[in-house]
Length: 388
Picture (cartoon, rainbow, N blue to C red):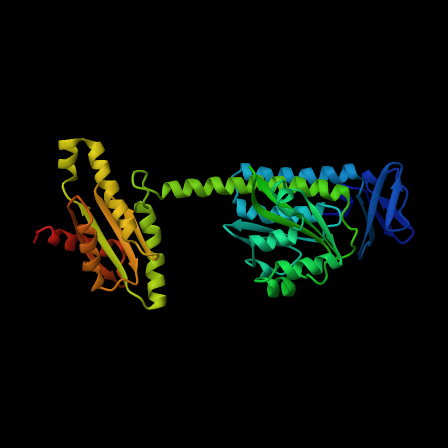
């Protein structure tokens, strides 16, 4: 784009000639790095080119900064409404925050998962920092204003030696990554905000200045809080999407994974078993006489029998075992590290603890597809029922 077509005042100096775009008409030619005209303030950016030197005037009046910030927020919100990936929008959000919040030269967002915070988006740092994590206790220590302020989402600013002191306390696990890739020794001021939704801290946002300890103004805090609110909305959308995905993978009656979940999980466990050099057991389970039970005692009795089998599968499961309901009375379980000799023992143990008859057939999976493994397990189960 021709700089003279930019949506802000621009001068072009070509020797003695001065060309001004329409938005620069009536403004004096800047002589320094800033320009004050009535109640407006501009930062002057000089851009040398073969055809001359452009003077780009970026308004730094608080009202203009607010307008740019909210334009950025609206752009991110528009992406959310158009169903763009929330994870990618978090990267867009931190990029816009660094561009708009006065004093910010870099920034990051750490997403909470259980007791840890993982750095998922950054601007101004090395991509090697992505994935670095800190514990909840470390994040609270880095925040420094206590749990009450943390839960209320209040911003805090650290300067100079405070940064070095708190970073030494709060990045025990991730300290090498943060010092090597997070430029901790260069940061002069950092603005931190817990991202809070419905009383829960979902993430943490940090905006950093490498230039000056007093880089962040009250306007910086105001705009950073607006970006934090936007981040909370994005995280809410992520949670809702994850809940829908989980619902789509779950059998509503038993709470086990469904056929879709089995199809997604099987190749992952198969690859893991191959990598670890361990067996992967697959067992096909069938609840005997479900139709007769429904006809005799009603569907509520049949549901109780299905839940009983699901509960038994859960109770037998070790940490590396998973169970799925794949049909009306059919279940499949996967067992990483279960040897061929152990499969009949596990089947017998479950059958002994159920008040209903259950048939089962199992095998250790090699390179078979899921369909091939299910067909073989189904044949073995049928033989266990007394078939040919």
